[in-house]
Amino acid sequence: MQQLYLEKTPQEIAEELDHRCPYCGTLLVPEIRTFEAPWTEEGKLTRPIFPKCDCDGVVQAARMQKQTEEERRRETASLMLSLRLQNAGLTGWLKDATFDAFRKRKDWEDASKLCVQVRRFVDAMVLDQLGEKCWLIMHGRYGTGKTHLAAAAIHDAIEHGVPNCYFRSWTEYLKRLQASWEREAGEQRTSDIVQELQQGKLVALDDLDKRRDPSGWAREELYTVLNYRYNARLATILTFNEAPGTPDPDAEGRLMLERFMSRAIIDRVVGARWSALNFDGPSYRSGVTWETR
Image (cartoon, rainbow, N blue to C red; front, top):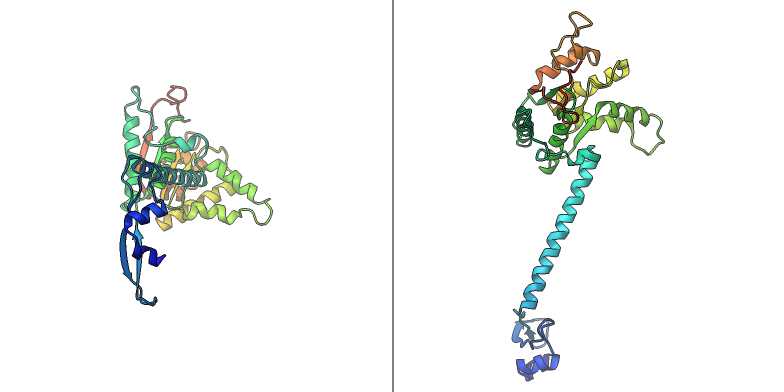
């Protein structure tokens, strides 16, 4: 073969090898090049270097290959995002609960302002600008979008590449803990479930005051999670129906939230707040302006 390259012209080599463009059929005439090859007897190697055809078929094929690679990357990125959202607890309608999907309202102008505030909180967290005041409190009436925006915050943080973000409904979390006590060895342990909320980079706990007459165990679990996150200065989102300072009409000198948690935890919640947002508009579900008690 080496001798063939030395004895024949590039045109003859192209014709003998029948090296043609697969798209337009043009015969591709090579450039004959000689390379240093000290491991050979002659010390050199001669090889034909065939050019790439620049026909429309080649250009289109390259474009299609690039599109395929980009589509594959997009599909992979979409799959990875879907898995991270699922692991974070954003399933069902929650996986589509984003800031952009939060509906503006003519009958409640502050809805858009509240969305902006939650978005700013996430931006500050991503940029590590929250400092010690790193808890966002959302409280207010039923159906006003607190859950949507809490989920949107987790969704946005995940899209920004923040690891270990979790959205948890408090009542569902307690059920999950109870179920873990009866699981067989090898399944997720209770300690793993608790660790998610204790050490997550951003955690949203939804409906903390929804469970009526919580047991001493439930109050203790809430204390464990919130006290850990308070001491570790970890970004946290909490949603309530009642404002932290709302007095209990049935017990003089007691706060409404003391039905669900100790005064010590309420003090931590207030002390760590980046902002406390009041959701006092009409329900997105029914359009009714509900009282919270």
